[in-house]
Image (cartoon, rainbow, N blue to C red; front, side):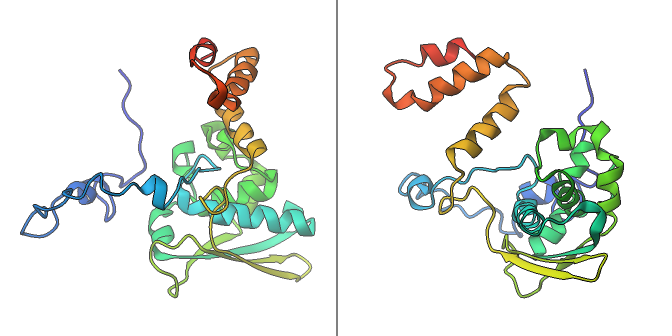
Amino acid sequence: SRPLETAQGAIRQRDGFLVRVEYAGEEGVDPTAGHELGSEWAILTEGVHVKKYPCCYFTHTSIANVIDLVTEHGIDPESVASIAVHAAGGAVDALALDDPITGLEAKFSMPYTVAYGVVTRRVDLAAFEDEHVDDPAVQAVRERVTLELNSDLHYDSHESRLRLETTDGTVYEQVRENPPGIHENPLSIPELRTKYEMCAERALSETDVEASWAALESLREQSSTRELLAHL
C-alpha cells in the first residue's frame, strides 16, 4: 500500500481537517441542523459552478485575471518585474505555500499558479505533475509574485485585484470579481470540452475520448447510456 500524500499542516493547522470536523463550542452540534434538508435545492437557487482549473478554487479568479491581462497586452514572462495579487482572507489562509515542492503543494500556491498562467497562458493537469513544478521559466516568474491581503473583502470573496509591473516600468492593474465557470458566467462548450479531454485522455484512448464526448453532447436525445458507457 502507498502512504497518502497531503499538504503540510492539512490535519492540525487552523483550517485543517480536525478543525473542520470538530463540534462547534461546548454545546455540540445544533440538534435542529438538517431538519430543512430537501426543502430547497441549491442546484435550482444557486446553480452549478464548474472549476476550470485543477487547483484550489481560491486561485481561479487570479489565474483567469492574469491570463487575460498578459494576453491582452502581449506581456512576455521575461518582461514581468513583479505581480502583486490582492485577495480575501480565505485565499490568503488557504494559499499559504509560496514555494511549493510537489504538485499537490502547487495546487495551493497563488505565486505558482499565477506564474504558470503567465508562462503558458493556461493551467492544466500537467502544471501539477511533480516534475513540472521546478520548471525554470515558471520559477523565475513565481519569485516575482506576491499574495497580499485585501481586508476590504469578505473573508470568502473570490475577487482578485492584480498589479503587474514590467521591466520597463509600465504598470497594469486589473480587477476580476469571480472565477470563470460560475452559474452566472458558465464555461463555454469548447471550454468544457477542453476540460473533459484534459481529464479523459489520461485514462481513455483517443478514439474513446472523441466518442464519449460525442455521446455526452447528445445525451439528452439518447434513450440509453449504453453508447456512452461503452467508451468509458
